[in-house]
Length: 412
Image (cartoon, rainbow, N blue to C red):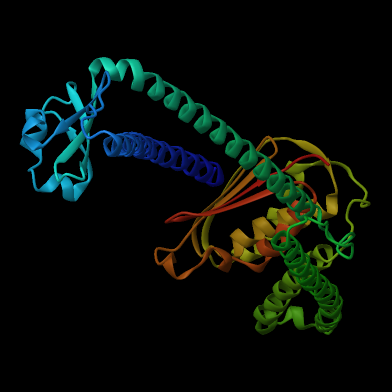
């Protein structure tokens, strides 16, 4: 739009400037034409006067020669003094009423010393007969030329805009289609150096992003495998302690409970990281699962996180089913619910399942300004990619006293 506006403005300025110049040069041309005629009359009279000093002064319908200043029309004498006319040589005198008369005066000194004044006059009738036709022709010429120039410029501008737009759209489509499979292919030739440089920049940025994603995926895979070992060791040693009778001693209840909680959290985190790092999840088997039963089971499995907390759980779960990957769905639901359990110290947690929309709201402490949206658990950040890859939508909102997570679920 800015290019079109610029083209239209340039055309308008060009036409206005052209019209002003045409009018200026028309008046200039008229003055030069009349002056030339009067000079020719003076030259012709000079030759005739040399042959016959008594030759009559030249005259015509709207042209007359006056001998001496006193014989000039009153309107001319009122505008120009006697001493000025020979110095000016040629001038245009307008009457008080512009519609009356125009006088073109050319002063010439005869060999005997007398001043002759060749006067060409134009009145309203002369203007209609002589000038009007020229003005109309000039007007039509100016309008026709202006419109033609305007159309030509607009056509050229439209052609250039369409050409540039076509190349920009080519670059845009190519940039949107860039992925890890075609990143090594050459960018399209956009015919403009700036667009080609931009395509190269897009390719370099995409290459850096893909390299970063590959490093992150590699880190997630390695981290999930490395975390499995200490978790397994901790679980084995805790089971060993229980077999040795530690679970029967009350003094060991709190340490064992803390270790059990940490192991469960680490197992969930490891599983989430492992699934997040998987390259292809489309081949994972899918089945029809009952959402309500799974969520109730997750609430029960994570109830240990609510111990010694003044929290009330309210849930309204409709009896719904859907076809999806049970493993991935359970990881996502577990992270959403466990996040609310972990980061709520008091108040209420509301779990609502309406249709295929799961909403989990938990109360925030009064001084919740110190928290940011991304500080409410690593799990939500990790499952974001999983949610997108299976076609679900995760919406996180933080209000003054409530932290809300909404999950829109779709059957795969």
